[in-house]
Image 1 (cartoon, protein in one colour):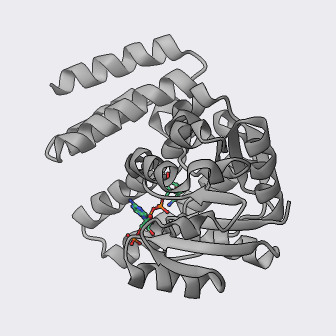
Image 2 (cartoon, rainbow, N blue to C red):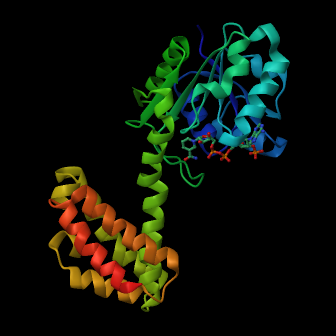
Image 3 (spheres, rainbow, N blue to C red):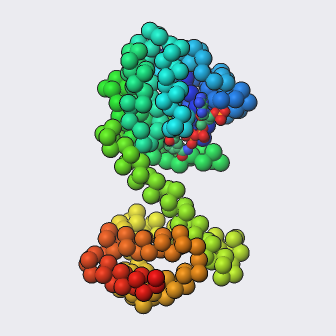
Length: 288
Ligand SMILES: NC(=O)c1ccc[n+]([C@@H]2O[C@H](COP(=O)([O-])OP(=O)(O)OC[C@H]3O[C@@H](n4cnc5c(N)ncnc54)[C@H](OP(=O)(O)O)[C@@H]3O)[C@@H](O)[C@H]2O)c1
């Protein structure tokens, strides 16, 4: 099979993936966005393909169709694609890039004879930078033929394929959510707390980055348990109480996040989770 691919949804992920595939000698066919301006910008950024505003039968001028649109739009787009293609779907491979959805969302295309599945890179694509795909894990699932093609895509861009059971996709994606967006919001919370005590945003960032980098480096070398420091790790529960008191004037979400993360660290990292949780419960009940 010659490697020709249409990209339905040329946004943050679609552009990066298509650009890497183009560099790996895949032929790029249709590049679809909702607006013509966005589709054109995507074609410029990919360096190949033809811009389409909305779905048309030209999407079918490829053996592989990659759907990289927001999760909630996939059912409608899959149904629309099935309507325009008819029998032409037989022999095609359709992959979506959602982290949380299984391939049942592509059922209308499977019913037309397409091999369907998913390919999800465990990486963040903010649109502001183009992260390297080498060494990134790509979670695959779906029909065996779809998985073979997904594996080829991952290999072409330097990624590592891992099969994830379709029914485990949402839990798999929740893990990624802890590791990236949740991590980011924890860092932003630390930034705001420093700014509240007088740091400028620039200085707060400078202050936190060495701490964050060392934490990641320790995690990489020694794992979480060996790297765990701070008052809960030491059993300094009076310090935890001081933190909780200092946060009592802050928005409720900050107080709740602090308490939830302290409890979670006890459960996942402490040598004596039950004893640590008992101490924490005492500290946090005194705050109410
Ligand atoms: N961003 C990430 O870090 C990341 C990582 C892994 C997986 N993913 C997955 O990749 C998928 C896309 O995410 P994204 O962050 O790349 O989204 P995005 O940046 O918002 O891009 C979505 C693209 O889809 C187009 N689109 C939206 N609705 C459409 C429709 N009904 N018909 C045709 N095109 C439509 C948009 O067109 P316009 O440009 O005209 O608006 C845009 O080009 C999601 O399934 C997400 O779970 C994302």
